[in-house]
Image 1 (cartoon, helix red, strand yellow):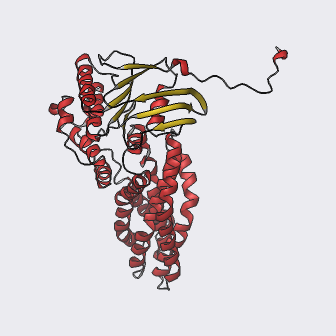
Image 2: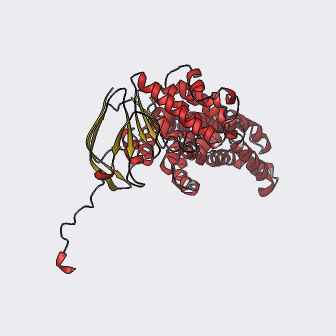
Image 3: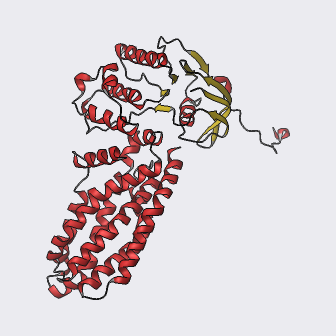
Length: 204
Length: 218
């Protein structure tokens, strides 16, 4: 499933942040979104995931194909690791959660309450949710926050395996994951301020 | 959908889940009323249907601000919105889980507490019937209020103010059923009105809640 975006403009809080953005994300490819803080990377991912409508432009191939992982992991502290993961597996159609536990080395933590996990372990649990969704396009917003070096490698392996199975990934990150990924720098697409029609230049 | 319902029920019964909050509040209100209005049993018999209904309604209101706020805070709501479940189903299941953990215990506890308030004997059946019929509407309306205020810090005050007027019709007809039942009057009219309100709320409000939630998730 190819994700095609053309002439996309997005807003945050009513203010346009990016405009004229276009790219294609083909199966087996990863795209790393780069850009300074506040440029609209999170807003872009949320728009593509369908959480908010774009201001203008076209998004194709995003229907029911995107697994979104934002800043927060959606983990319930009073449920165990297995219960958290099983819940998402059942919501997305029953799949085995074992590959997800293996990929992020969660087997030893399986019976622990998620509230007792460290920040990095929670993040691993949040990312392992992607594997049980079975969705082809992963949309990841700063996925490596609070992960240690070996966990980052674990995550990169999971993404690589996903790409190998014909999936694709759009990742907003500032660190090098060692993936064979194209870079999408959204800086040049920064929305220009709207021109005020009755602006009186002579006044200055 | 069943997975979501089971998860919500599990969360409610685990530590800090809030199950029993409404029930405890209901118990406290009805136990304290005889102390505050005095022990004349004839007076208590007159006001007991109204007091029980009011107590149940406020107990429902008490647990509403947790209904969607917790899921919003930890990001689950974003993930649920991108899941294959339609948002209308999500809010319906949330309302159902709220009813099972809050409304249903109130319905079951009401007759016991009716004894404390000297509820006349024919009134017990009607109290249970009216609460069983009315509390689903309270949960569904409450879910709508929670969807309106999700994302607001300390939205509880606004939520109560928004939801209270919407609760009034349910309270009027629900308490009327219980009152008429207690003095052995005919209860058909208010009962049908109550059923109509509940049926209408259950049929329409999930769509409104989902629409509001979509806007609030932006």
